[in-house]
Length: 311
Image 1: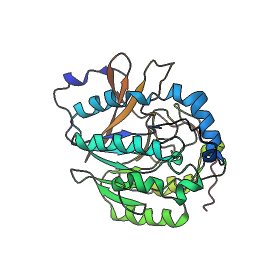
Image 2: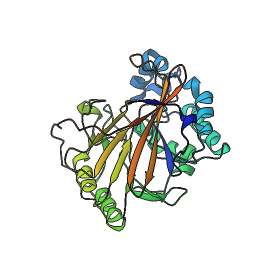
Image 3: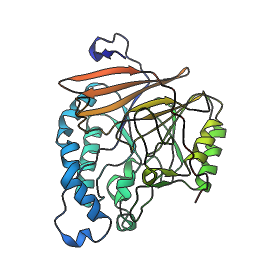
Image 4: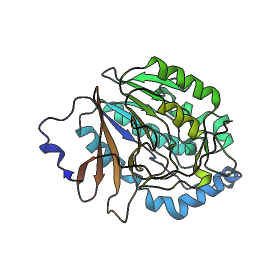
């Protein structure tokens, strides 16, 4: 894997999108009335760990670099916040507004931290602050990119009392299958949760997995053309071939502002180049400077059983 200097690429691909995920804007909450639910755990995690790991103060510099790439389409697959409080959503909204001011067209779906409590879902806080950038009022939904290339967005999040598990329902799988049947050619599908429990880049603990993942994966494996499923949630980069279907690939993009002590970088995102022949993935990472590497999908790790029962 060779690092590429972006400015030396003589023919940058015309059909591109940027994939950003897990921004996790955070605020330490001091009002005890706001901590009478699962948010107490999340707030402690922010205070003790995430504020040192997730360097959201880098947002202006990261935005400058993103804007310099000249890519119009930006897909953000959730976890804009840490505990789904209004001040965190305000920071996320300002980030998205800045993308728009710089000529980009963001599309968003929520992550599990954006529906962190039942209270935040009841008040529809995600929709209030970020709803104008949703691909549709209801998922799954197909929305084309600027060049007309289709992307299908699937719903995978729900509030939980304690765990970080996601969920996709049988009716949502059926709606997705109808969209896949109507599609042709290479296809992009975006969700917040990955479908594989383990790759070379991450291992998903049982309490952080997607309920219905195997049924969703089976639907994508039936698609007759190349398909790239891309997601976030795990905060780690991973690009692998599906263990069953040679036409399906899985991409997880690392958390945008995460400090990776072992690799020495402090921010990252993915660039997806798409066309009639399929997909290419470039990984952008910030260390002392931004580096870009062209990634090749690796073989998948043998998967442990995933429950197939759908809610």
